[in-house]
Length: 145
Image (cartoon, rainbow, N blue to C red; front, side, top):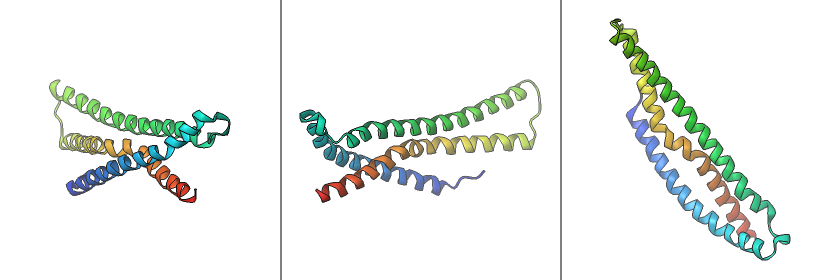
């Protein structure tokens, strides 16, 4: 599996842009939701309970999706390391590794490093999706009010 270094660089640039967009959107979402929270303190019976419940459920959902993405990548990296350790154990035990074994080691290491570089983008994606959707939704709601 060959990895194009330019595509890795492009992915890092996209991730940086997503981080900036998430930070900016988070600020907008917090500023739009603070009045909802304040209104709930003043009058709990007439509060916007739908919006208040979204504040919790969206975060739980994003944390769960990010955790699953991270665990999946951690498992693939751990599996590559384990397979490499087995191959190195065979080599240390006197076995000869053929070209296909060295190619498998190279492919595993390339896949593991690609997976490792992709972790930030995969972990950020659920947060970015939720924040940008909320930013758009709350901006439309504020324009209607």
